[in-house]
Image 1 (tube, each protein chain N blue to C red):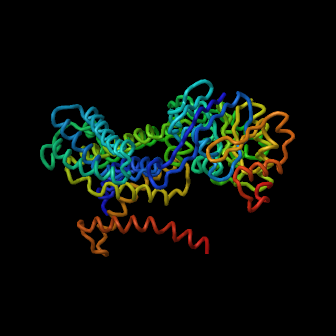
Image 2 (cartoon, rainbow over the protein chains, first blue to last red):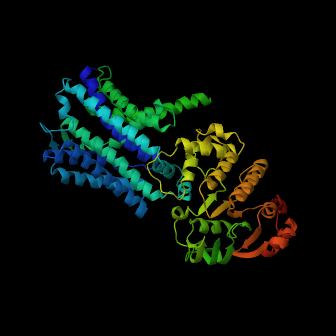
Image 3 (cartoon, rainbow over the protein chains, first blue to last red):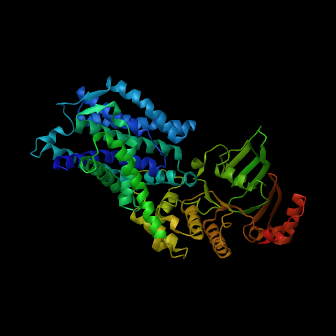
Amino acid sequence: MSQIAFLGAVELGLVFAFVAIGVYIAFRILDFPDLTVDGSFPLGAAVAAVLILSGWNAWAATGAAMLAGGAAGLVTAFLNVRFRILNLLASILTMIALFSVNLRVMGRPNVALINQETMLTPFYGLGLPDYYVRPLFVGVLALVVLLLVWRFLASDLGLAMRATGANPRMARAQGVKTSVHIYLGMALSNALVALGGSLFAQTNGFADVTSGVGTIVVGLAAVIVGETLFRSRLILLALVGCVLGSVLYRLAIQLALSSDVLGLQASDLNLVTAVLVAAALVLPRLRRGRAAA
Amino acid sequence: MIALSNLSVVFGRGTPLEKTALAGLDLTIEAGSFVTVIGSNGAGKSTLLGVLAGDVIPSSGRVTIGGRDVTRVATAERAKLVARVFQDPLAGSCGALTIEENLALAAARGARRGLGLALSGRRRETFRERVAGLRLGLENRMEDRMDLLSGGQRQALSLVMATLAGSEVLLLDEHTAALDPGMAEFIMGLTQSLVDRHRLTTLMVTHSMRQALDHGTRTVMLHEGKVILDVAGEGRRSLGVEDLIAMFRKARGQALDDDALLVS
């Protein structure tokens, strides 16, 4: 693997770290299996790209992308809380609806961001090669988000959200309005996923309506790899695990695809992904089985 | 004070499985009294607690707690008035959270939850002191996850959690039923001392006649969704387990198969 390919994989991993943290909030904190992310990731990319093209400041455009993602999460939560639609199904409905919404937002299947002012533009001129600037910028942003989410989950409000996912009956008995926390958590989760989508568009120079396919698998893979790395229940380590898991996952994919011995090509990506996720799921179980024997 | 008037609860109305759990029940509980509730399976004990907690919305009738009409107020919104300990030790606390996080969650019961740190230094100290008061050694395990503890330990902490924030009523739902006899006795002693110290209006559902007479200031027996026995004061003191069983049997109109179960 060349240095550029390595840094490219790290960069992509860091972009998807936001997705991983979002997925962690939905799946692990709220216990809400949420597939909305397959739609909110390209939604974030689309909203940011279209607004940047229309002359918006890239930071403001990214903020708007996060709001759009949060709104998508609210729709899923609404279907589930208000109408009691099964959480998984509610999220699938939002996801397929978003495919049409994303096409409407962009007006066409993909939008290029060539020569536009992105969040990264000011940092490109500072002397470092672009392929260093991108992972550094995204990495710093991921660190900031990680710390903010950690701090939130340690607050009274965050604790109530964790109780909502872990033991809703007890949470209600303690005065926690569980439905409010499902709305809040789903909005937060999908806003973070949309932030990832926005950064994806800005680092790669395009937004594409199909870029969301499989986002959930990638996010979940990162969470699971992270959990395999740190088998701790501490929130901070779990969040660090999301980020590292996302990067490691991308490196593993890159390694698998670029190794001549295996003879894999780019079109094998989804197969490799599925095998890696299955391995990450099975390995801890095997280890536990051996310890028990 | 709790006032229940003409309270009815019907589950599955209009279906073949229609079940009347409470049938026009009237009950007034003075502030500061400790009422024990007994009755056979299906008598309506759990439904009664559910109605008070907000989990069950009555088909008709009125529920007031501390002068406030809460008949249709959701569980979370009346949590300020009602503290609760469940029968299942796993139900009353969050296994995935640490001991101190569970306490922080309970300390904010009924209060607005903001973005302030849930576990500040001062709160931690308060929690530690309260847990140390249990003399179970748990004060040294404040950062352990709740699911590492035994059922008895979790139930003891549930009682502490129920008394961290102020409340009008304490509801105990057979909270010693899942414990071994030694632990059950410890939890009952702890319950008594907490109720005395905080002067809580308490409603305790129990299957044990012994417990129902040994604790509290008043005993109520439910049958088919109604109060069929209500004793307090002198009349209650002279009552024995045998008398209760006789009444129990009369109410059911049949001999009990296994008296030993009730005397335990």
